[in-house]
Image (cartoon, rainbow over all chains, first blue to last red; front, side, top):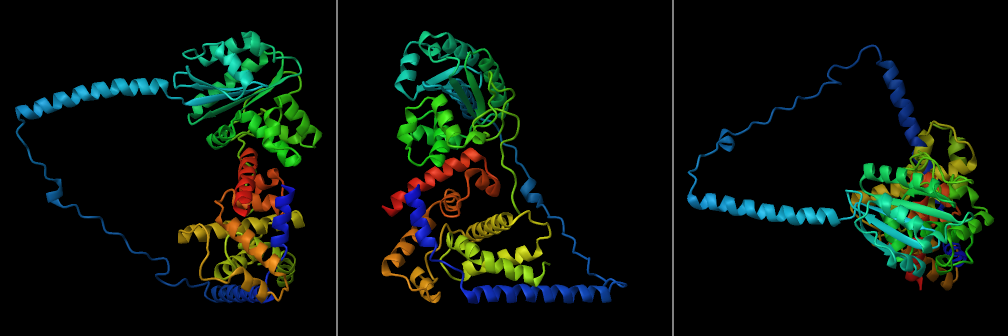
Length: 302
Length: 164
């Protein structure tokens, strides 16, 4: 980043606003001031008698609807038409069947879990796990030994916690980050709530927050879990000597410790020290921790 | 409206900053000049007090970048390349004696920046040149902090590729 900063600095430092432009701007603003003063003076002179018609406006005529456009003819139904309806009904039933299957297998929410293993559970509108994805070898080894698909996500999370391989990472000094990405706000809030509860049952610290689909897509493009990717971006901004590849091999605890060491502690959000944040965040995520708020920025300076 | 002395002071102190922000979107020419003027005109009408000089600067940059985006959107453009001064002509108009290497770098960087999507163009400029942190940029652009980090990372990658 330093090299890029230097390049931009060298380019943009050569730029300054032309003096003529600055002078024209001052002249323009002063001309607007004169206009404003003149119009105020004019209004004050005429304040006792408002002009007729200044507030008048024309009515908008109602649109005319043609009688011809509304006419509907009656047609006799033929046997072929009845057959056509029957065929259409059969097709509709078939499609509904396929549609239902598609509905069941489609993910509506993704739960990203980053500890040192990084994995993701895709859940459908019925809260069932329909897909799993591992982002590193540790996670792949864990998922290979489990059969989570078809389970309710609460049961899947419990199965993970009880899994021998996964539980080895759940030490007291570990940090488990959970992200929830969903287009269904109701489901997102419910899942976040349950994940918060889940975290309280674990021996390690952790946090849960919602993340936009955009960030999830970027994380996946880098073959990283969402939480690890977000932490990596914060760390890279603070310590330009590291690369994304370096961050991929760090545990969440290590990433957070390095962020804190680099002075970015306030960017880690409000994950509690003891166990597990309370409440959950909405919107696009707020730092790296959990907490209440809408995570939508502080407003514009206008 | 704000007093003339106040406006002249701000144009003197932040004119270059606002102009540079305009050039992130436009080549030097009528569009960039319009945005420059409108930004300071808007400042002259702004009634709420500012908390600090940094607040003023950030406000001016935000207004300028928003106006640039509005102008581009209104004309259906992503960036402007035609019918305006070339970057070399700009440097010449400013009576700046720059080496041909500097002139080429300027041209290359400006063009590469203007070809980036926005975001990440604006967040990248604010972070990499103006030195704002991601939380500050999130505040200016009314965007979530993590999204800003993502934009900056993506912008750096795209700009490096464009310049390599």
